[in-house]
Length: 246
Image 1 (cartoon, one colour):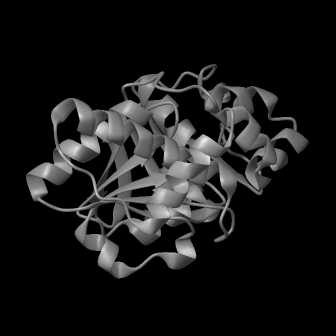
Image 2 (cartoon, helix red, strand yellow):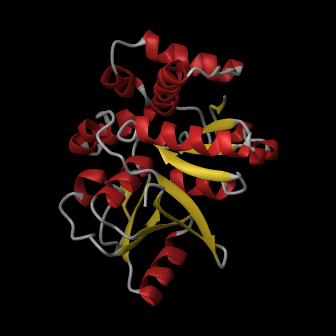
Image 3 (tube, rainbow, N blue to C red):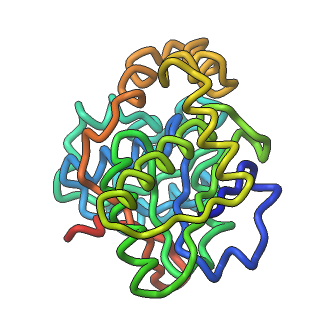
């Protein structure tokens, strides 16, 4: 088990592993919620103009933000709470965000790539373990961070996923080997009384609360609410996700 605490530390050698990208506030949580609400596919793009173009060509909904603010002309913000109120069932969504979708582009070379957050922690861990055991490879958690820098909320979420992996290992009788970065992320969970406290101290959490995203903040704190596990597919150089369980 390895953990990339900042995308600046990402090494192409990680491409030999099963990857889990975390952008808990909010891209990961939005993607999980979209699939939970019956969205067929979530396409992730790094640039707003490319997102608008793809959505127009294929009749998709758009979701996205830049520095926390909804992108002009988009149907939805990068907001799990807003997804709950939007008719996304049986639709495809093009998603563009400040951090998460850009990190997905960087990590796309992994053997398999999943999206994780607190909402789907246990389900995501299960999918990653099954896939890594079949491929006989490592698992690498990739924290999106904020504009390439370390942020506390993603590292805390990584530690929570590692805790779920420890539970799965104990139940199934296999041994996990943690890198130093994974050990550090795991210790973060022990250092804070709960996710709310950690998120309130994080730059991402503070920014979300500053712009009035209290509903999203509370929603992203929930653990093991969803069984949806976004799994990356690539088609004609376009990255999209559907549910690993389907």
